[in-house]
Image (cartoon, rainbow, N blue to C red; front, side):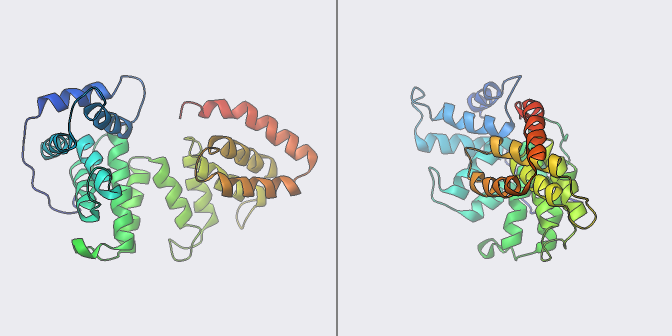
Length: 270
């Protein structure tokens, strides 16, 4: 169902040196393919590499034309953010769409699964807002379908969190607290701290179909605050937590903080 987003030609070009850097950028233990794409660019553009910006761009373009998802991802983010190139949403969309198009059926746990899943998320964002310069009209249904593919097939935590948010909004997928809690729970258990905070808030307060569970809800918010402390989500998560703490009974607070301390280490690897 998600095989075709937009047609892209594929030109096979051999860039052996860049491919070697790609391989070395992704250690056996560790990081995501998105991290490896960034490392690859940093290695090419590193202080001791002597690689000019033009050479870096050319090498990435050659690798992208040869079908390397990490190169496409790096180029997409560069054009999306205007990093080292002029900002160009149309080119960014093209690279993200090419990844999603060509790798929609990639192994969900494969080495590049995170890049493919996040490409679905990004293309979905473009369809949500529309991109007239690329002939892309706003299409909420298409956006939701792309997001759901990333959330279900790839099990991407950020996509699952976004689906949870859609079920909190009448203009999204319709208000359905049970579905929100389900998707937030899937993402929360993978260490996604905004999802942990949203799940905690739902559980703490209770909503139709979900009985209030203040201890477990407060526990999730405590964990979320710790994990999101240095991020842009810290402020609103802190507000949720402070509001919950202010109305929780002392014994509930004590139990929740103890649970958070015992449970939090399992998310350290995420």
